[in-house]
Image (cartoon, rainbow, N blue to C red; front, side, top):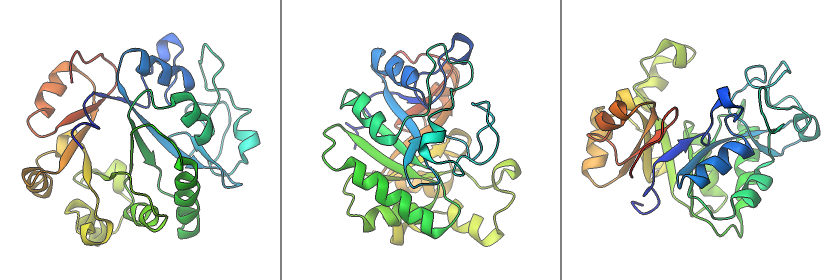
Length: 251
């Protein structure tokens, strides 16, 4: 596990919107590879069941379109140019992304939470199927315990990680019931999910359960680190950083 996270992890690739390199784009991933970084990316599911590289549940922040990102078939998704992209990048199919990377960087692949259990199973199945035969190093992770369980049922043997934080931020979790926040905050789903690493918000690294599991040998990555000072602080509670906005000098 330590070897997998040997290099700092570029959050959504090494993006720089001011210079026309957009998050989760082909250009951002090439930039990360050129600098020797690992890559974090996000995977959504199109309306016709094709996984593609995209972060948001809606389209408007990084494209000229409106509406939910899962409401369009993949052919329509790939007509959307990422806003401000100098290279005219469009959202890639997950299979296109894997072909691009071709083992040149370690991947930390986040599966985005889906609207219902049917889509959860469909995303897990499509991603697992795409990864059959992929020769590069990768991990899979999600905020959603159900996605980790679905990946296990698909026979995935790659390291699986839970993404977490304190579940005490209204802008992130206002719609969650109190009991669910408690379960997620304390990682009480571990007997079910059996995650093998933790990706934790940097301000939550010292949650008791995160500290306990790290003390027991579990690897922890910290997100999202945006400065050398924040990286130094995160090093007290994490084994590697997921970063953006600066260039870490060392692992």
